[in-house]
Amino acid sequence: MKRRNIAILLTLVLTLSLSACGGAAPGNSASGGTAYYGTADSVAAAEEDAYYWDAEMPMETASKNGDTVNSTRANVPESVKMIYRANLELETTEYEKAQSDIVTLTNQLGGYFEEQSSNNYSSGYRSASYTVRVPAAQFDTFLHQIGELCRVRYQTQSAENVSERYYDMESRLETAKIKLDRLQELLSRAEVMEDIITLESAISDTEYQIESLSGELRHYDALIDYSTIYVTLQEVYKVSEQDSAPLTFGQRIGRAFRDGLRDFGDFLEDAAEMLAYSWLTLLVIAAAAVLIVKLILRKKGKLFARKKKNAPAETTEEKQE
Image (cartoon, rainbow, N blue to C red; front, side):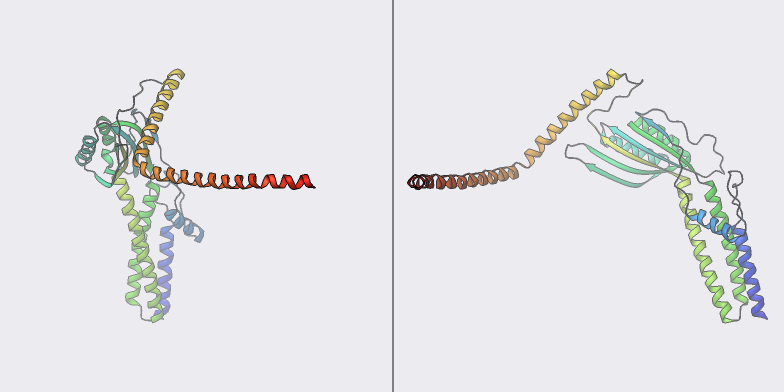
């Protein structure tokens, strides 16, 4: 009789948990989300939506040559979960100072560097790449102030609304915790070994689900609380010109001609540097090539002399015939 009661209670717990998981997440109805009810198909759909979301659909605004970009945080309610990202390409003639300024700005805004790397090219110019994390409230401030420190060659921004999936995971986490409490209560009253094994297996699966959902929420919290900015800093001899108005066709042709001459000059410099660096290797290759050509010519000369020597004898024999 006790075994039958436990089985009935276990069935009720699982039914209640499935029904709760099927409920719509907070804010879904307002955002056009689908409300899930306690059928097997709808629960499967909710599971799939929670873990396999479509690729992000950012609302991007782009800026070239340091143009002003509209604020992405304007009129965003606190309940809306937003992830902000940006890509910046900077150039400067004062490389060390620019690096120091970027570090100072990041620290002043309460941010940190997630990744850093630097390169020193053979031309002597250096570059660096950063993944900067700053509080979401300082996102626009960082983008504005960094434009005063370096020349912004290219800039993109994106804002992604993850409210629906965030609240859905949060709701499923609460449901999983309630389910775990009920399963543990049933386990404390179970006496039959078969029931104990079934309950322990269900508890293990629920604990794994709780850990997975908690990890996903922590990941989203980190992306929401701290915006991500990818920065590339390039050292240049002269910063590129900033256009205040669209260029005419003639101006674009003139600029392309100048850029082409400059690139060709850079190519000649790189070629000369490469020749100076590898002159010994090229000398050995040239000597080997000359030796091979001489051997081939000598062999051809011997064959020609042999044919010339045999030619008169053959002619005499032909006359006698």
